[in-house]
Image 1 (cartoon, rainbow, N blue to C red):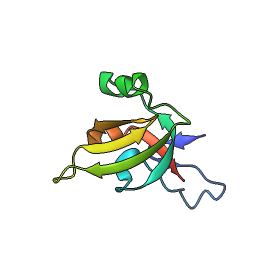
Image 2 (tube, rainbow, N blue to C red; image 1 turned 60 degrees about the vertical axis):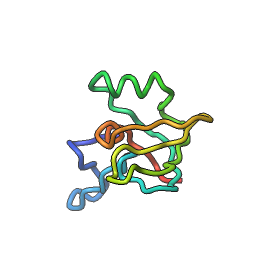
Image 3 (cartoon, helix red, strand yellow; image 1 turned 30 degrees about the vertical axis):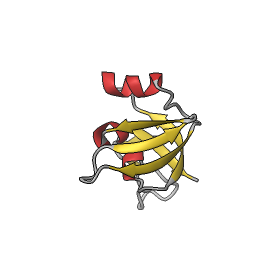
Image 4 (cartoon, rainbow, N blue to C red; image 1 turned 135 degrees about the vertical axis):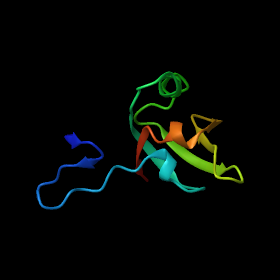
Length: 94
């Protein structure tokens, strides 16, 4: 997939395609499939080690009262992640 910053390329060059949604964009109860993890720092590498890998299905269970962190469910367990960490996980909605 070709990307230029956060805006992708489409067949119509006059209309940029919308950015791929991230785990941080999802609301409670949403189901999604991980498509990409941008491993740029130790926290995002740790997400990969914890099983947040392309192809895995995730469900957002809920958020803390102030909106951060998110609680997600994947591979039979629950994981709490900061929104800033969830922002590096691109997803496709299911």
